[in-house]
Length: 528
Image (cartoon, rainbow, N blue to C red; front, side, top):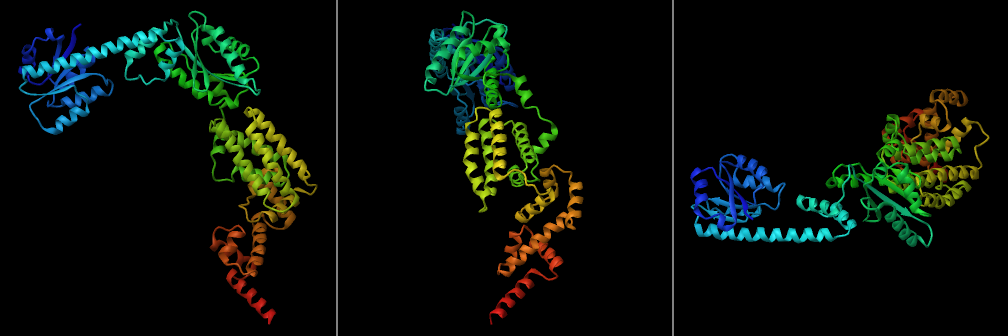
């Protein structure tokens, strides 16, 4: 076998001189082409794929080192000999980093060139022998191992090896597809059930010329070949259900590819789709269409889920529970679902988001010393347990609706007082929160403008003025106790001390600090 050589040098005499300086054929090499500059050399390298390239280190435009670095981006195994009239160390250092096989100074010495060619020939022979052994090894591997190596081994730099793996699989079909399976059960016999499941899958899919069962981490993988299975329709679902027996399972179908060497793309999509299994019932076969159907949400829902200006969902849920409104709780749970879908959360993210929201709401409910607070505390662990044990999203939703409705019933259900009395009671208990009429109207199921008019007629005050007066009355109590003005402002719900100062003066007629001093003087005078 003759190894192909490409010579790249901008000096014609060097190119011709290299042709005659040694007997290339006797050394197992054949000069198949030459190039007069780096750009031309790069083009010809792509066309002829030489086994050895001899390249001048200094050429106008693209240098020899530039050419080598360009080739190395796609081909880490190519062999190069560097020619140069310059012996500077920087050039040699760059050449070494680029992985060249040898470095020769001009004028080229015949013996030095022969030594380099023989050394390169030995390297090429060793690589060829290694590829041959590898091919024989691949051919003897079980089909499953071939698929796993094709998918998981880092062979992207060696397309020839991937091609050999495909040849060793000896499959011929118009289309291929990867399916990933996640199976689980709740009994002590689960490991035994898994073994039976895998055996049934082998019997069903691994008939001659059929699919191949393989391992993919904690999942079971299937390389599908038969058209009826590749379609990922009812036939596949039926076969999987029969094989699963008592096991619960989810399956995800990657994209269809027409070349087996591209099967990695199908695997990656199946892996991505399987992350959404929490939103599907057991026994589902998830393809891109099914995924898009579940995670299609309206633009309004996406905007709602991404809105960070309004109260957080934990706060909203707290409001809803505190006013004993099933309708308001249902609305918050719908918003929580829209957030999960719009962000395409996986199972872990869904459980985390629900746990965080429930904990925030129950934490606020539990902060007091009432019987309702004790009841809320007792439900906290029940709710978290429901979230963590739900087998899929539908079960989680039903558990949340049921458990929170049960909690409201334990609270005593909706109060018999009017909505306005409930609002006033809520404001008195939560005056330090960022209360907004729009949010309360949403909780109670009213139009905010209409509810504002009802509130004004009932109390004689606009909503914001009523809240301010409640806060100012509480502030007077705290100032009398000797707290500093900025501390009082924060405690009664004003993040801006200047704004608190103006509100206090408006309703009391004096500044908070003056009021505090007068109260202090009165206490001291009363004690004398």
